[in-house]
Image (cartoon, rainbow, N blue to C red; front, side):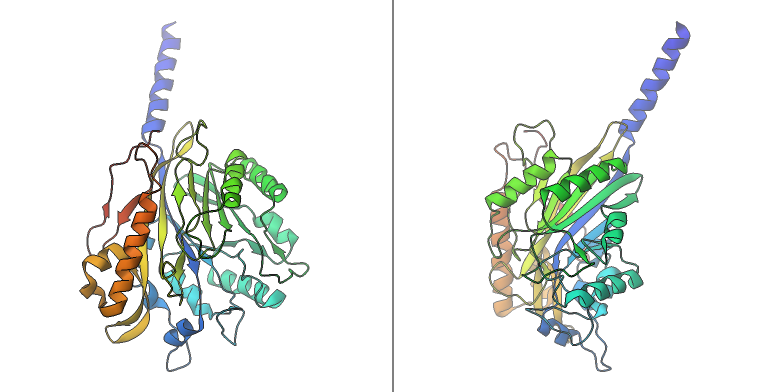
Length: 386
């Protein structure tokens, strides 16, 4: 009897240790990495090469703080001629700069992935492979798709499954044998089953959907998110509308699991779009904890940023700047005049829109106020209970 009690005590101790010292993981997600014509012109060097590294100058410390950072590559890397909208092809240096800034994974399933046809899709994948950047969403053929999707990644003892889909390809037909992941419940159900069979601790769907420039998700997005969560997905992170849309911690009120994170659109990471709400976006920070029992979201924050199209230290470029810090210290980013007004407008509009997403008890995805060259702060005060 004493032996059984001793074994029980040891098991309880080990269980308590597993719960209190589980593996933790910090993920960062960013929106649409775009390449309009004026961006290429700004990055063009005297020797004919391209340098996009200054774009990430003010936020790379934040991106690199993640154990894993993911961004949507919304261009092809199809080679010259380099063009912007409506059929994008960017120099490989754009992906190089994003990787050097800290992005580990790139999604490629979006409405522009077929802009240069079969050759463009396949060259994009070759370039990413050459650069050593894992990617998901488009594939050379079904064999590659079946072996690489879902994308399984292990960090800090946490086994993650990433799924990726798009609503369409701007009417450009996908040519055999290429594969583009479309939003299709039959295919998504299969992929979610595969993720579980491969031992995923946490499943994240990265999805390209919604209506461009709409600041609120539509019913189709909401229904698709609920379907994904009901069929084994743990978090849904979206893009495409080119503006920041609403988000939620409670996508299925009344369910047993909380929080359930759904971010409908993070907006643009960097682009030449300058209309109201299009000139910035948010990054989403997801903190996970794996214990003996499960892997849960322990914290979720957003970091707002704005794209400064201007000159800093005599260099003209498209700079991604942490918007809260830039509003408080515009001189640090050499922002003034009408550009400063646009920055303030974006910052205020975004904060008001996202504060309105709070649950009745005040729980919300809270702002992470990142300060370049200063200590970061988090706007806390929410509760994780309904």
